Length: 112
Image 1 (cartoon, rainbow, N blue to C red):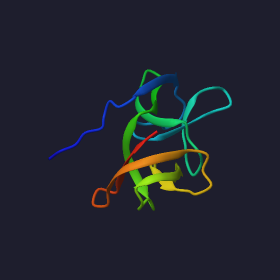
Image 2: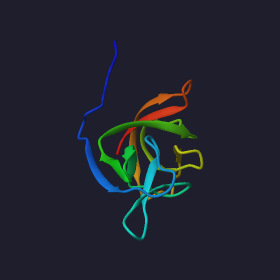
Image 3: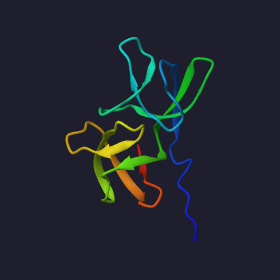
């Protein structure tokens, strides 16, 4: 049986996009209020797309992204990593509920 969690409590915001931001990247917000790719830090959400200098950022709901070091289901502290994905980080501000781990693809699915 195939399960799908996409659509659960999904909320997306739009921001001016700066730098090399792409769909699937964790996003931080700059001091100027723009969306930027987050690397090795806390993040606000996951970029769902960039067009004409505007980024859409999913800030709640279910997402699947590239990940490193996340091996446990349930609540995990997570932060962005240096390869446009997320990693386990116990001191992270954001806690996410991990409900899918695909070690073959190197991805995790979690609720923001």
